[in-house]
Length: 123
Image (cartoon, rainbow, N blue to C red; front, side, top):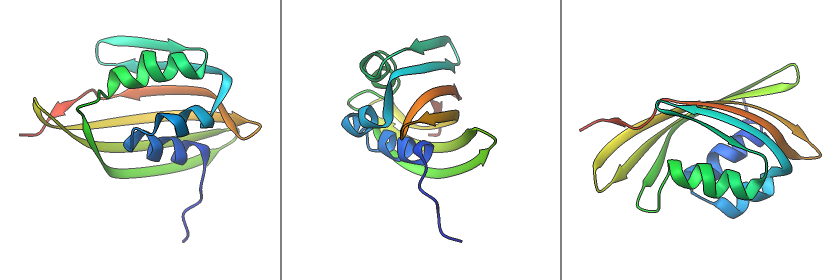
């Protein structure tokens, strides 16, 4: 069965590459984002604050990301996206899993909720 390109899938692939320009192009100018990590909740209402205030905080410059798994499912007016990253940085090797729920408008993600496992050390 061929894989379908969806906004959520494109977001996950761009995040794995830390391609923040591509991510900015995927986000609606008035994105409604809320996310949970193990020790904090996050919010953003525009692409710039989501990228610099959230995503670049989660995955820093020295983090090398490898996409380990990616799955998507569409239901009603939402898409569910689950992905797992392997991350290597000066502190060691980690695995990170996130679950997203997204919806789009005019070809952009306008609503996103995220839950993250946090960085779980594997060595």
